[in-house]
Amino acid sequence: MKFKLKAQVYNWKHFIIIPYQCDPIGTIALGIQKLCTALTNVFQVLVIAKFIDSAILVAQGELTSTEVLPWLALLMALVGWKRVSFNIGKYFVKKIQIRVEEQLSKEFTDKRARMVYSQVENPETWDLVNRVCKNIEIHVSEMLQRTFNFMLYLIRITGVLLIIFTQIWWVGILITLLTIPLIPISLKGGKTAYTATKSAAQYDRRYQYISEVLSGREAADERTLFAFTNHLNQYWHEQFEQSRIINLKAEIRRSLNMYGGSAITNILSSVIILALIFPTVSGELSQGMFIAIATAVYDLIKLMGEEMTRVVSQLSKYNEYIKEFTILANIEEVEGVTDLPTTEQQVFKTLEFKNVSFKYPGTDTYILKDMNMVLENGIHYAFVGANGAGKTTVTKLITGLYTNFEGEILINEKSIKAYKQKELKAMFSGIYQDFAKYHISAEENILIGNINSLNNNDSKEKMIHITKDLDIYEALSSLPKGFQTPLGKLDEESVDLSGGQWQRIAMSRALMSPAPVKILDEPTAALDPISESKLYEEFEKISKGKTSIFISHRLGSTKIADKIFVLEKGRIAEEGSHKKLIDQKGIYYTMFESQRSWYQ
Image (cartoon, rainbow, N blue to C red; front, side, top):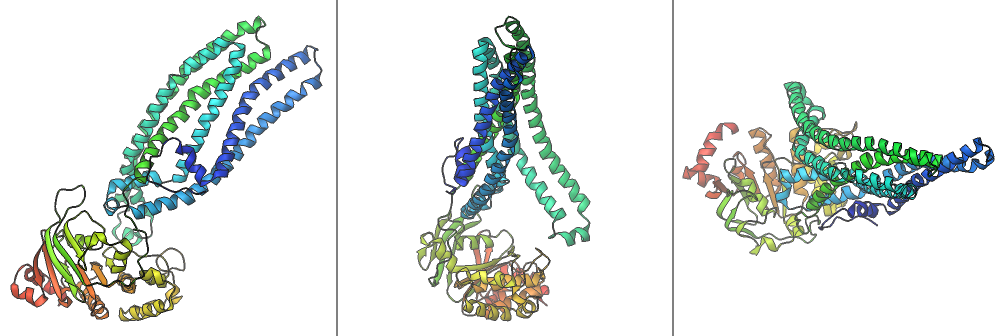
């Protein structure tokens, strides 16, 4: 049996159902261990009473010492079981945690991959993801343990109260009445604790990021160069303190409520014990039963006043957690988004925008407004414009990341919404400004561009041709293990590349894809303008006769484009070849002239 994340309502029943689906044997075994421990505590009260009464009779000469040994042996067995039981429980908890991490981590990784893109770009969603998924194996195992502990405590309380009721009925009633008011206090404390967790999440995210900057290898060079460690340490401390104070205040309120009520019940339990002296003196209660009940009353008051209220508080906290678990599980998904690109060769003829307007979810500002354009097969296009003009947004719509646009987007005269995700993946390939640097071998870095033919010999030959054309073949071949060399900084054998080399790797990956349309969204922004122009010229030679889309606010690449679209305020302000737009002396001319010196 395996856990499968579904779009449904999760509630307190899933405190047991989720770990059971991940590890049925471990969950059942833990439940049996908890049950045995609960019954052991109840029987121990009776055994202690019998042992003490027998020992007194031995001292009075009414019993032989051998007659008390069975009770002593049984008492030792019960105490021994409780110690062994604790370690048995720890084993099964760890076993459950391993299975939960294995299954739920995968399920939520897949969930994040399937989420609609608007949620991927929503910081509040990632706060939610962080709260639900961080240490998820601990959350789930603790939900199970607290639920079992609640049942265990109920059995212990019920068992001991039944013993007390059979001996002194009014004591049982009094203990119950004293501890009932602590339950609503515990519920409120649990909700307060989880509310604090939610409030502190934004500060947690910030200080964890700063911690990575201060300790990770990625920023090591700049930490040394700019000496910003002390400054960021101060910022880290501010964010950490905000989180700590929020959680500390919640814990103080919870503790004051719980221990305040518990202190009162402890005082009253002492009064109850004193009251039991009278029936003991009168012979109504045996001395052994008095000692056993007196010990049980103190244990019971602690159990009901502290342990039970703590468990109820924690269950209340996890009830809030499971609500957020439900929210995350029910976030809208894109059908087929995790499918591999179709192996059927996609034919691209035209792409048309008809009066397309778009604004990002949750905003009122249109990024694109009544945009109209037509792209045709085999032509190099460039989209230029100032930052915020809508260039990258165009690529997000073209690749189907957002579908909540107004107007029509047609691919081969067919609505983009009618295409399956696997068809769009096979239609478009791209490289972006923040392209990934995968810490795997150089060969894998490139070949994953065509995931359907990863281990195909033809793909490897194509990789060699592409890397030669992009002037990266010699650099990769000269690595310690050639193309098999792991890249990045993950281990001692890894080799890190220069910024330009990483960009050529990313461009090679995009060219490996058989997709007929290539999108380059400012992947060379970190290069100097001359290097950028050279790389684009290399790319243009390789992709000659194919459809490509360049996105840039620097115009070194636009001269090789067949057609240029100039975006301004979400519309196509100008379009045409480089020469045509220069002759118009409009927006493009002004932008190009302002950058002319960069390319001389």
